[in-house]
Image 1 (cartoon, rainbow, N blue to C red):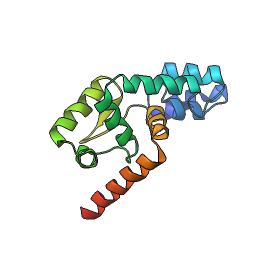
Image 2: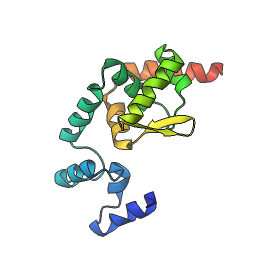
Image 3: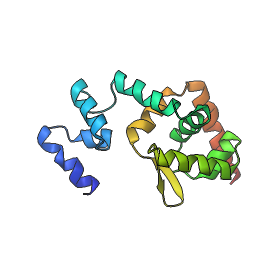
Length: 144
């Protein structure tokens, strides 16, 4: 089924934004319906998503929060430069996070499997860290 048909399947519920917000993930859909929040994550789901990402380890959580600030899909090389990481090692970590079903491969790039996870991680980054990472990314883009 295409994303369009999945989005349309929620139309009879009068919540067409549900698929966009949840990616059709049954856990996310159930939580959204239970909390009457069809446009994003409840506090309970937000905490659970952050805990799941943190459980991958400190390095992975840092990779995920940084990747969440990047335009999707993202290439591993700019992310490696932002994190001062070896590109090969970082790519291996990104592949591991794909196996863990947090990210997915998109051609030669990666992206978050669910936009809701990305958005949750983006919102968890402090404004100061966001500014620093975005400045670093801007410098890298200007140098390229």
